[in-house]
Image (cartoon, rainbow, N blue to C red; front, side, top):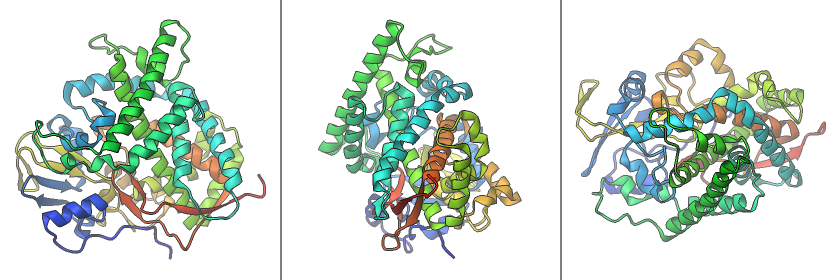
Amino acid sequence: MTVPPKPPSRPGRVSFLRYLKLFRQDILSAQPARLYRAWMAEFRTPFFRSFMCNQPELVDLVLKERPDDFPKSDRIREGLEPLLGNSVFVTNGETWKRQRRIIDPAFEGGRLRDAFPGMVAAGQGAVRRLEPLADSRPLDIEPQTSHAAADVIFRTLFSIPIEHEVAAQVFEEFKHHQRTQPVLNLGALLPLPRWVPRFHKRETKRTAKAIRALITQLTQTRMGEIAEGQAPDDLATKIMTTADPVTGETFVAEEMVDQVAIFFLAGHETSASALAWALYMLALYPEWQDKVAAEGAAVGADPAFGDMSKLPITRDVFRETLRLYPPVPMMVREATQTETFRDRRVPKGSQIVLSPWHQHRHERLWDSPDEFDPARFGTENGRECMRKAYMPFSAGQRVCTGAGFAMIEGVLLLTMLVAHYRFEAVQEKPAMPVAHLTVRGQDGIWLKITKRSDC
């Protein structure tokens, strides 16, 4: 039986320095195997204490019942600050609440319908780009899914295709930025005082500065179009013209640059990861690929928003991919006061780690947790776990504002690509997941692509 790839767990106990080295190589394989069964685990270091919580009741406490008592840890901000500034991804408290009040209306149901044509156009562009590559030769699919996801972001946010001069420059600089692994900054691992300099790599700072300069160009141009009454009705215009219902203020230019940076980072990087793994799963399980291809053929090459309800199998395939390979594998919160979890003292300032990766594969929650089975969501166990142990987009008040957007985008792109092409795994290059910011293939995700005979 084919089993989806899963990184090896670290063997036994290791020193703190050894753990840091393993962590920098891959977040997932640095963790012990017991986390796939534990409801809670404590980690002590010379600098901080952390508690991983897998028990659904604890996760609900942190994310849903008392979220203000467990704000995002500053560890998250450290490596990403040069690019993200003070974006909604890293802020807390009243600043975060104000940002979400302005951003959330842009991603409501009716707005998603308006953004749908841009997603379709990006999907059609991805289909065209794959045509000369569909020759059965091994191909790393991750750059292609990154290209497609970036195209979706630019078309829906600024009404420009990825081929637009500025959009293309942002995409290229972002690829360079990601190679510097900014999230692995020392400040992300150790609780350094604010006065200690953050030694970001030179290339990290250069690419972040370049990306922000390009986004500033797009933002300033859009502000001018809004002032002249000539702005397209897209996500950027909606966000930039939405006033906070509490203060009456809109985003100033610098704030909008911060938000666009996180839309690109989160919306592009996570969607690219999920789509690449979904294609790999279908390559490993051709019987499911045939079902997805049939659904895609039925809705055609130019699907309408209403056609999304006609893709239940594709939706479940994408859901199952997000279960096995959640793009953001771990989330870190911080206890603002001393707590008691499972009769254990959790000191103030402790790091609270919530791991979709481990909860989605938890042996005490899911039936056959390491197997790929999209049909599980029709079972009693699957429905129960979806309700209490499934959080690819986080949960509670900090659930990803673009969760609905991402589900439509992922299902749409998957069905459009599989309707046109057949994907086959490359036996000589099996994929192995690793995680830094998102879950990607250690050496890429290699597939052979051929055009379907009826396309």
